[in-house]
Amino acid sequence: LSTIAHVTINVTDVNEPSEFKVLADLYEVKENTDVDTKFGDKIVVYDEDAADVSTTTKPVLTIAIKDNGTCTAGKNCAQDLFNVVIVKNTDANHETQFQFVVKSDLNYEQLYKATAKDDIFDVTLTVTDKGGNKVSQDTKIRVIDENEEPEFTGEPYKFTVSENVKTETLLGTVEASDPDIYNTNYGTLYFSLDATYDDAALFDIDRKTGELYVVNNANLNYEEKSEYKFKVIATDKTT
Image 1 (cartoon, one colour):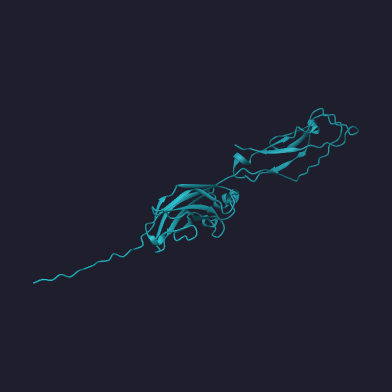
Image 2 (cartoon, helix red, strand yellow; image 1 turned 120 degrees about the vertical axis):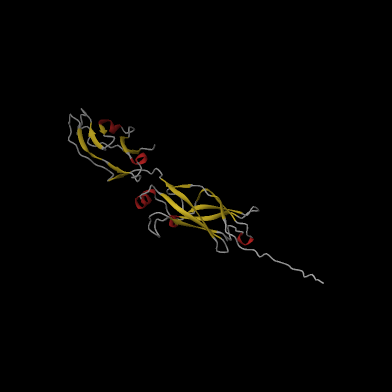
């Protein structure tokens, strides 16, 4: 004789780790980009668990940044400068889109000096789900130098010269500085005189050094004119 017993087996859901579906090798952002500005291509994370459905207002999935280089924690590490935030809610394909966002002021020159690596951050991104599962993948973030305006130091300038000088005579030197000290493409300065000023016609300037001269045979005559005014232009190299 035999009898039958009915057996039911329930399969319980286990929260499974997320997966980076789209993650570029390099993300770039210009220095001086406003805080809270999003940048770079989208980061796409796949997670099939219903418990991990995320929105911009309720981000169950989170991505943390870890700087793998030499930096000063709390000051110039990648995690101090950038965040990763959700920009598109989890869709029907279980994919959630993230993007980098600027967290703190980005100054190329300060970061270059601090990191000594051309402002490229080697980082690890770690996505964590509701179950505490963690998945990591590496990428890079580069801060791009932006051409910034030079500034004169010691301006306005005033020089003195005797009348009736016949030969080219050095009056003095005008000086300017450029914030782009680590980029010769932007930081090299050239000087010129503003030709819209008639007073500039009797003077010349060394385009590289900023040395200002009275030209040959200028025939400066105190009784006819005792003061000359014009502008000097400092232009950086922009290519």
